[in-house]
Image (cartoon, rainbow, N blue to C red):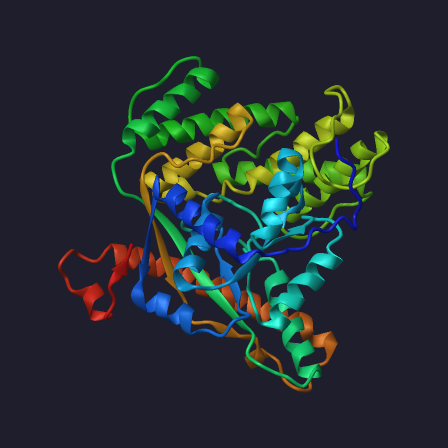
Length: 427
């Protein structure tokens, strides 16, 4: 395995011709399953913005980077973006070379990132490229919900604005909220039925019959029962599935945190699980005389640390099972997302391809100018409150725009509602 250190940062080194060529390839690859649905007015809005914006899409699916890359191609924007550090080692480093020259730079999720932050700030300050960041920081496979946002987007934008002011060359630093929602264009019931039947045969011994959504819930309940038994967690009688999932997760997190940190941590459950994964991976790598957090450590299955790492990873994945997401509204999209997450638990691998052809509905909300939050006399001690205010506005804007897509989709055909906005849809 390749040895890395915390300073092994990979900077973006964009080549224009390679980006243009990759844009055409990406357009072709994306079109096999996904059609972009974006309004002419939204394309015009993005084209009108000055360079050096921070593009902030929600992160509902693995295809989001492809969709965002195609949006940049259509609007003529030059973008640079973050990619997880381990991706740069794929194919003996050749994929990393491609990523760098496509405009990507590395970020070590949960580890040391001073160089990555400095590089990202420099992109915004230089104003030659836009910076693309997914503020949720993770793919939760929740097409209709925006999960808690990380503060990094707001912090970077504020730091860039402050530095430009100190250099006496102030200009707008804009955060552009981009809402992406996927809609299947055909009936995916046969695909859902086939995938679900295969999982039922593996887990329950045979495929069941009947409506899909209660069968998906039944399968998930069985997997939850097994996880509770494996981790010796007894659920509180009478609570719902979401509360059981959260109770199991919290019990595992608290046990592991006491073991590896000496005390229970605070914060969003996913972030707590991520910190544990980083700590345990570091311990496993140290046994091999290596440092860093890149790539899976090759630890023997009987090593107790291996079991701890798998438990922390289970906690991180379980965050994606959010409240009664499927029970509240069992749409084809929600059933597909939930089934994909259950496949990950049963098969132990990610299923990235969609179950059918679909539209990626993209809507651009009005940009957020961070200067509106930044007064000349704002002391550094109050920046955390400013960052929080920007994060709240960005979260509300993204969620509100996703909800507006639902209302837009509900308009009766021929009602004239979309024409009333003066838009045509570009595909």
